[in-house]
Length: 391
Image (tube, rainbow, N blue to C red):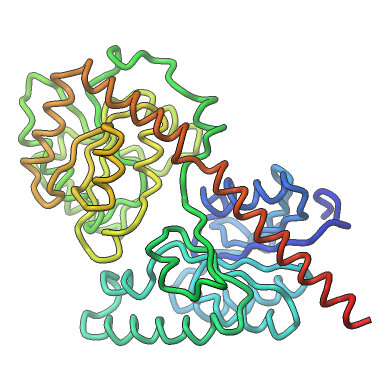
């Protein structure tokens, strides 16, 4: 299928874990590269796919069936992605999951430029993976770290989602491309409902898990005065699925509205009908120095935030004066933050406005996209020089 001018530099993004329309991968990186003049292909898994190809927003999307079991993801899916990658015959490949390191190295052996996009500190993240037995987590984490170190020697470069992650890789091969919100998208969908007129709803958007504060957010609703009629809106997918059943047994679940996974347009509408954005991740090592995209999305839509009191997040939230910092393990403290913002609507509105300005001036994707495009142009020039030297 033709999608754009195939005479341009061909780029292929690969993921075996993230959804086809992942915000960072598709909406930010792929679309930004297509807009900059690259011929872009994205290979990803989808629930109802069987090696289908479509073209959307200048990006050629090739989907294959999502594996039913985790072991299939590490075997059959990787092999299929490798085969589709070779068929794409791109000049530059860009993979987004550590399990695709082998695919990246194989493509490098074929003389391709290969970029490893590190969304999180994966060795640290493994230490909190519920599906890995606790006694094996350190071994798996250390193994992942060693594999990464070996692979980086041969890959063309690393794109890291935060400065803290970037520091873990060789500086001559690494660049930070932060996961800030799309300013153009957010500005086009901003408030149609005045803040003061919104219902007393606080919202959480993203993966819903124990480590991301699911229990504490739900439990906090029990400590908010009933006359405020506060509601917690959860938009996302439960991980694991059994967590939802566990939370539904809590008395405080009666004040929760679970809306499931939402498309971008629906997320913006949900934010536009809420007063507070929650991001109360637990103080585990891989979260302490992470930049959660939901924090900046709340800010960009003018929502005051209630956020975990981590040193890095304190610089952002307190620095912009856009919300309240809390102990994420304390439901009562989270509840007090919600109560304060609901009973001080003018102050909450002003916090939200300060957050919006901070995103417009500093925390936005447009500046990060320029860095990404620059990397690609440098790699394209290297490829051209190599091709000329072979002639």
